[in-house]
Image (cartoon, rainbow, N blue to C red; front, side, top):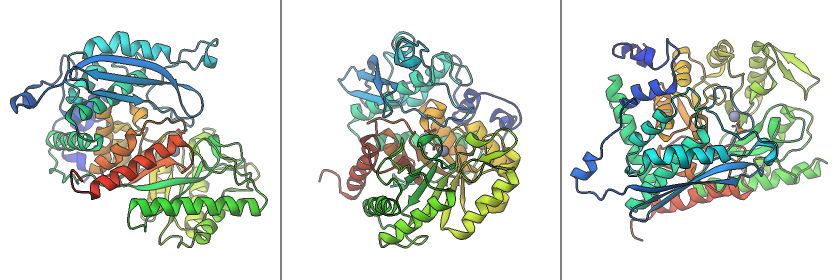
Length: 489
Ligand code: PGA
Ligand code: ZN
């Protein structure tokens, strides 16, 4: 029996398993909020005599991301002087079901990519509704945001406006309480899971303490992220056998450097990198790319499969024409879903691959079911475009046995509360979670804390060069040290 078969009343339908519903309904269901006319109260914390900071100012600023494209920065200032800031990432290989990234469309500025409208929405429409609220009441705050924009993909205000506020509030709340962000997020995550299970009548989950995720790191970039001719988007490594995060990071850097050398020695470009910092060589085909990564692991003195596994992000939506998967790098082959599954299985048979993301296109649900039946017991099949961090789509994946892991990108869904709902839905359905950055990033390192707070299995940040990536890797180093060091030392 699927976990939701025992849900009370029409709960399964409200989660989107039978009826098309928007994410607000999933949110109401999962977290027990009445979004309309709602919002939580400050009573519980006040009753405990805890100081209640309130939001005094909300600022938004158009800044630039790692591709030089405008993005939204939000800063929240509390009445006690605490501040929280968040800068939003931006994808290139976006899923159709993602929340809306509101752009100005004014060709006179940034080729139409400006985000001044989203910034105005923050300051003029959102700020008046949240000033005076306690930023620590994240679920109530997000409920207000979802009330202001109740469109399914946040097209009214823009998910970039909404998420900026949602994340900045979490930072401000952590600062006001004098705790690291991951501690504050862990508290929220525990509450979110408890509420969800109460609502659904599931047994209470044991929420693990904050824990370090294993990185999944880009070595070679293809697809829409690099100028080479590889069909698949990312060829990654994961130091599954590393005793701790810092050691795993050293392994990754070693492999990356060996790979650059191997590529150069073989006459390929081993220095120029794609959007996420992975090498972008013009290799002959996908198989050759995986071979190079395996050789680099060996050249680093590590054991492929034992200590370091290979992961792929196929990003198949972007070479699917609605009928066929068109692999240009290998003689413009046109493959059916079943041919693609054969192709992926042939790679898993030969190489130490333990994870394949978006092996099929975002709406090829039947294909995903067959893929999961065939390879699900051998590898993680991660839904990115398939799920777009949407609790309803993840619940559908659980129901249909399509995929066994969910990629979690906060800006695909647009609030912290819904991100937690997506992760809870995945975990309750037996899936694992991979917290992920986007190809367009900034110095914002929130996802490092999110991955630790939720004890996510893996984190996918891109490669280990370029500071927008290292902001997260380095934040994880600091968190690991904090988790090891007794308080106050
Ligand atoms: P994106 O790609 O950020 O360009 O969407 C990242 C991924 O597909 O995982
Ligand atoms: Zn992806």
